[in-house]
Image (cartoon, rainbow, N blue to C red; front, top):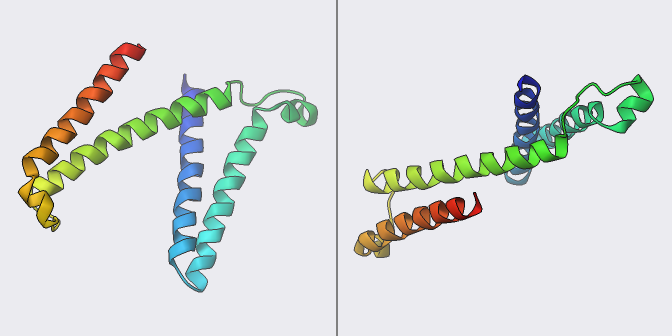
Length: 135
């Protein structure tokens, strides 16, 4: 169980570095743009190195598997859970920011606030029903 948890941390860290590096590379100029490329490269190297330790190439070079979990399946599960958690947090944070008036909302949102709230609740209900049906 601990190796699965550590694998999720390593791959999520590598993915985050690559994504944030891509955003930095896209938005920044000059020297900061180069740092974005370094972050992308670091994320790819970390993920590639860790994936190597659980591959057949590790057996050829080191004589054994260093990481003994099914990494592709584990990462699929980790990404699915990460997206689910971020989606839930995003929905809740967006609703909180809207209710607490921390951002300026467009006029249509002000006029149709109840409809927006009902849509958010409907989405949560649909996701819950899908989860129950899939399980």
